Length: 478
Image 1 (cartoon, helix red, strand yellow):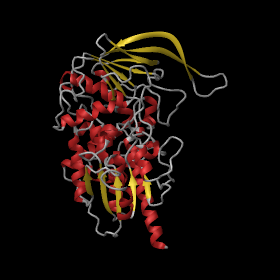
Image 2 (spheres, helix red, strand yellow):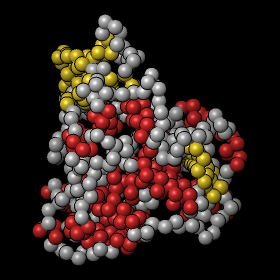
Image 3 (tube, one colour):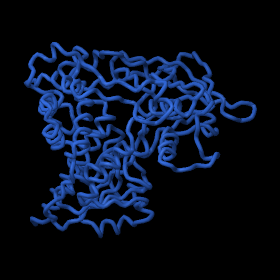
């Protein structure tokens, strides 16, 4: 801790966003960066607490106080090494993580948490620009082969750790490019795809084999995969979006959120779609149903496409803005109001609205959504609040609806192909280290836990890699 009084004399300062009138015209990353001296000053604010709750809150166990001090001292190479010991891809979470560490920072009690996420991104970008990020090629291979199915954050996390352990790793991806939701689900204005490609070049140089356009169960028989590899790690995500079983759900113009987001990312990558295939918000009133991050991404994408208006609704009540007395520090505040750069670009937000049906005009085209205001009432004996209709209804005009209500479980056909047990929620059932009912097969990320955060997926992938290693070592000892 080089400056023990910095947290008293230096206020939290975020880099902020590019000017709104500029950023809504393109898909470039919206976040700006601080000058090096300012970034070092922000890192100096870390108090090096006796009990580092930031470290406790991070699923990867990142050593925040250690690398904050190194950043403050300008020791960027050492700072990246400390960060990279626990985190293989800090350039991803440095851009898109909700920063559980910051919510558990002692200074968060005064709403002055250390800018850990931005410092993480700055450290990694400095490492790349200075040439500190170099392939770490394993010196010894153990002759064992592992297949990783899915190339999102969990798959990449598992593949990276297994490769460094000396396994020959092949990653299978059904889409045309590697990255999973990092590439196809998260908009470019939050995560530029060159950031993914830059890391992939490192992973390939380290010896990982990537195969795209390969669907297990269709292009490769699961039994053949089991025969050809010593272990398999499934990381194909939670692919079933929550739907609305309401009148006129099948009207043209009602889409799942990822239909829009995936297509726009592909368009940005140069892929072309016919006029009939193209989902566009240009000149339309857009309704986003769902108040989470995916809904926010839809808001930002709709604005960039030229939407006439954007409304985002959520069935749950409006969250607390600063502090939730039922969710005290240092636990991650799950129910605080989150206002993103996309919301600031133009969006009407409403809460406690339940969607009843979609409305068609005389020509049979989507023209609105009928919603009803609800109240959430806690039973006298306690327990989960119940949704109570109020009878207050209205129609929200819209020509495009995007359903962003989250995801439930992995593709059932895929799981069934491997004949794996499921848990009560329909996810793949596993042991603590990700081992499934088939001892040779492991699962990690959203297909194991349900939809969650990128940082948790990476941690889950690394955990499954440890499980694979323990399994194979156990076989060798017999």
